[in-house]
Image (cartoon, rainbow, N blue to C red; front, side, top):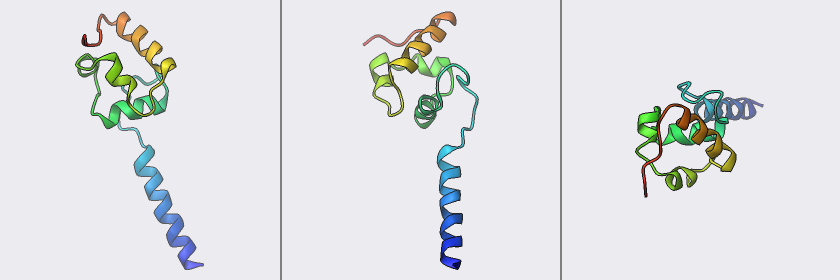
Length: 85
């Protein structure tokens, strides 16, 4: 029984570390998996995002076509674009 309690506490702390988002960058624009992918790469502003190509971002785990389309629209609204290949 004690082992189960200890194991549950360990799993809870692991989940909390893996799934807590630090910032609100792109909140409401793209889904959480895509936001976590950007966060993992330390991309927390449109300026940093503009240093990457569209292909580089699409290779991130958690990024798909839907997230990319929403992101491109948002970037276009803010006069920001991906770097050219």
